[in-house]
Length: 196
Image (cartoon, rainbow, N blue to C red; front, side, top):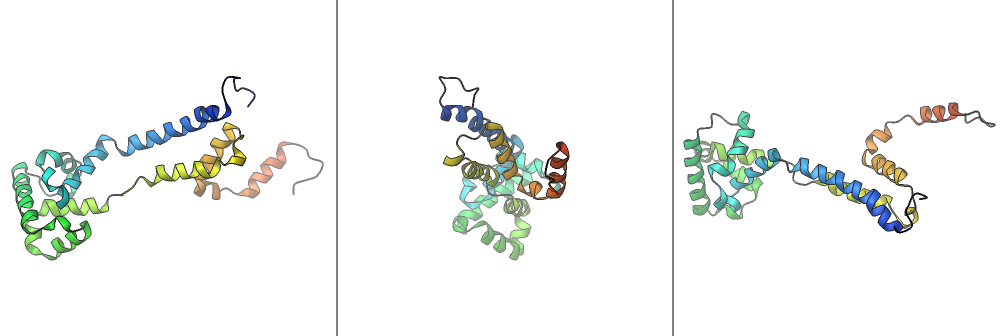
């Protein structure tokens, strides 16, 4: 804390040195999560009955291109006509109230749906397998709140960053052999009393 300027308060210092660095990492994770390739994936949601009025070939073509391995040949005109038929079917059969899992069960059990809407069915299956939340970012905020308590407010920034990293990557930290760490620490200096 010796290098804090006189005109900067301790909370302002921590805001600048800890929270801003932490938020920049979080923003980088969110940017990666919602990159253009991820936005293309999110376009699969237009196949859901609740979003079907936004569905068009142009709105889902980035997702279809990204996941082209999962689809048979994608003919633009065939998919466009399938989309138009899907919109009509959603309105006629009142499918807007159904959840994704209920809709998939109904479509998978009905051969007519499978044959009539192969692209829609595959898109809904892909959508069902995608992760729902950004739990990593939320977990990072919770970790910071657990580490930076009132008792630790005067902690050095480097130590706080190290604790946050240890907490975030606890699976790696648990794999460390503590006996080796103690041996390395013991070898660093001559001690009056041996550590082992």
